[in-house]
Image (cartoon, rainbow, N blue to C red; front, side, top):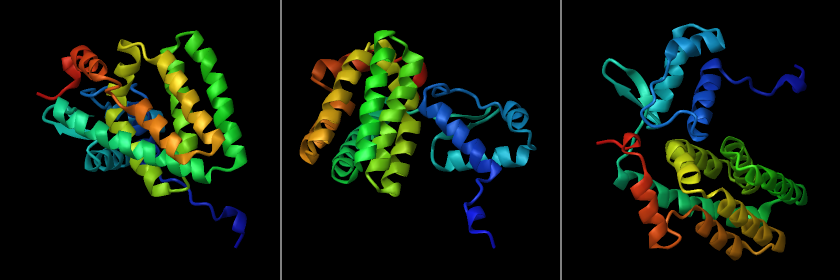
Length: 229
């Protein structure tokens, strides 16, 4: 048997699930958005069976929710659930940053620095759409650098469940510049190989609060359409 062909092939349902999850994480599919099964069938050139399998997987993860007469929609949260989930995201991101600081290779540290530098042009252009990709790339280097695949998977799922709300935080509150600056603080801690500082800087970066006003502004400006009743 040719060992070069041992790499497992992703099932089509997994490809569909991953594509939907990526769109939700990026804020392209907002809470409450209806999932178009027919469009997915056409996009991936498949029957409804693998599409339904992918949607059921996302429903089991509480990323999608089944609505009568609508089918699957991106799950909404109420404000209490959102804040509780975000508290968990803050803690897990901070742990990831600490582990990454301890475990990243020199090549990974260089990659993180390069992504941060490239992100500055995006911020200067105030390009919110490009920032989503730059932000994800920065954090995913840390997820990979933590050398803990279970932690990475949990973080990606948390990011998917909060993707639409995170998009709002950047666009409505104008956090692109401050987020880029905080990425720089995290990068500095990583380069200094100071795990505790990396942990603290990530806590500062992800936290909604950053002072009581930050949390208050977020709540006031959050569109009610994104929240469950």
